[in-house]
Length: 320
Length: 293
Image (cartoon, rainbow over the protein chains, first blue to last red):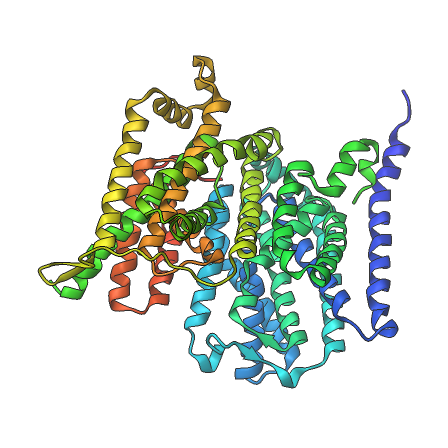
């Protein structure tokens, strides 16, 4: 019998190593940017979208849910930060932690919807996002700023915001690593592929998907809060904009759901393209986003990484 | 009974029937194709724009515009099936894929309308003589009454089509059991394409009605209508035409009576809470089937 165990061992240790290298490259790239240039904006948003796409992948790629109301976490995080900082007068870091807590709270409230099938789940999460937006708009203007929103000018510190985003991105990647390589990740993939079979093997479906769901919720909440800190302004239209969901979905899917590097590849490529289009053809931006979504699903439903894995299937065990 | 409440109830039923029409369009497409048309609202608004421009440029009354719009949107839907939807049936996850494709179409369509028609709100200038009818102390604008009549007529024609003609019966058969239908010899492809055409045609006609009844429309307001459609069909049960009518009326009544007592935003909130509540308690809606994961 041919000894294949060595080959398999190489395969299984290669994946985490490759992932580790990628993470280190990312970390070094982002950490050194403020020393090279004063224009933090592009890289800040790149980190933001990477975080959003990675967290979206937790629930869409690993568990198989498509939350169309994903922006709810983002908006709630932004407003939680704003309200805690401005109205309650707490320091910005505490407010951001509050944003994360708010995200987790919303996720737990939404937990009962996880038992719904794909289409229903998508619709109800969209409804919940819009309901959250309406509820915040109905809060007294002294607390939440009404339709004018909140301004956080006294917390202005772009560099600190940048590095906080960096920390959050690293945390997101670490969570992804844990989810992906641990038994929880295997359980999630089992659930995604065949729920009944997973239950038969002993996977606690409800608890496992709740873990993925909460993980997917806390990072957009942080992202929303940090973005609010970076731009100093929070308002209903941009905090609860459907485009936030759309971009998270597209960036994650373009790279490839279910792969750790999928969202990284997708967001770096597409955010770069998006930025270019914004600079050259601002009015076409939205149209191109819609067309990209359609073209992506028709031509490359598994994303770039997925298509690559399909074409070169022997390399699949090396792709994190 | 309190006059305002009575007014609210009647408004609720009239608007509810319009909402039901939106739901019917969505339901027909979902039942047969298993595709949730996320872009339904945008097609409705496209219909509104079509009626607007047909009136501006050719002087056509909205009533004459309706069959034209139905036919052209029908052809558009038929073609769209072959371009977009057919490939998705073979993908890993047809349900999510079609949801996302239509999501992309809705964004692209909204952006296209913004590019061509600009962001200003438009309204359709059409009034009847007399503009209002009074029933006791209840005031009903003639336009709304006429629109109600049109919706009832369309629903009757649709019901006749679905229950008395062969293609219509085939559509219902596909909704019930896709595989068996092919054994019996029904051309699934042609019928699916026809259904998408029917769905979009209904959306276009709904758009004309919407332009007549609601004060104004703009490129991105389609999302609101898509959401109303979702609420209606979830209430009534995905894929069930009768359910759409019941769901539409329930939602219309809830929204309008809420508006009598509370302000507009809270009334909208009621709608969402109703949707969320129904999905959690009885996800299949009033008439639907399986929905749990």
